[in-house]
Length: 550
Image (cartoon, rainbow, N blue to C red; front, side):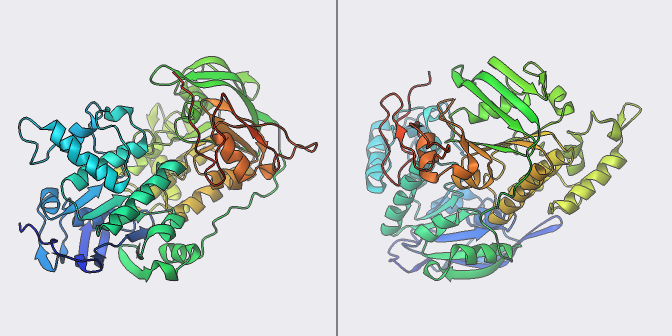
């Protein structure tokens, strides 16, 4: 491999070019004759639905996959990548959505891991000085001697970026860079990306759903659909709606209307519920609420504030430390997850790969995981695969799951198609209580619209729904009741039609509303500090120093 191909390239000049890239997998053409170009100092976003071919293209540009057809040029010279080491050698770095760090090691150890300059005995002092210089240049603030497991998601991502930069990356590929970040972390990351672009790096964020971020920071955007480039546009000439239409091929409705549904009898009652986290501290502290038929109870919060423990304890996947869970008048606090499924509780987990599916199982087998206890799908104690296969075929058709056949392995589905499968598996059982934990996280605009519409259909069908989301717009759009959660406690429960972004955002940051008007309207209420937490400034309502939960 030739080194130094990017040396001397000036702002605006082409650093990387892909011509006619084609990649086929069994039954699928993931990339179909794609042309793509990157310039020095440019932020060039790549958009597309889940399964559009973005990840495949970027894996090819990073050497993780080899194209069946097409050519790659670096600095005007044709190159061939046999592995990611070849790409790294030529100045290409990639930060994956799923972190590739060693949790038990320190930040600086992770940055040095596998670096040619590390040697047998790494010079940690010199490395720290060099990495600190990168931190100062691009605005990263991180303790280089901290263990990775101690870091927030934003800090872990910073480590991944620093690792790529330390190895000399001049082209930086970012996979869904803001998908799991809090608003303050997102703001800091975008500032760092802009600083890198000013330093003549070429940045390629590929994104599925956060179109405002694309419009805010990118110079150009390439849109993929069904493995082909449908458009390459200057960002200043497009809108959020026009980009969504290019991605999906039709108009996309960004806000779901909450139709009036007659509320029925109480389905779920939670009384003073407390739950411990995996690390042993109290993650949920004395939560009390109820959900009626035809209601969506939205839990809004920044990740790590107890909402995931709440979803798991209601689904029977985590033991309650105290309090009661009552379903239809029956105490189910100590019931198993299977018993809860049989009583009509459906659960959509946030971890669609780790918890929601088994990658090496076929679609039929994944559907069977929620049907094996149902007499309708069993014959003489054995699973009736004929019936389950028929159900799978119906689900694939009705929910638009893009898969060659029901025998396709779940691991071969895109994130959006896997989420559709999980959603369909749960809703096909017509649950009386649906627990939806981050149901649209990481999905493209089309898949997000689809999932939200299905939740509203379930609400119309009298299901009681607990919706956990870190997307405030989603919570405000869908929920009949909004419960901002902070440090394991609800800061209040606000009627959906009266919930306002500024108030709910402040409550998510640990601030309690001091009052509502005589009609119960929270729209004009003020928030008081909780244990001397500073009041966030306007436009930055998510920033508040957390109390210790330990």
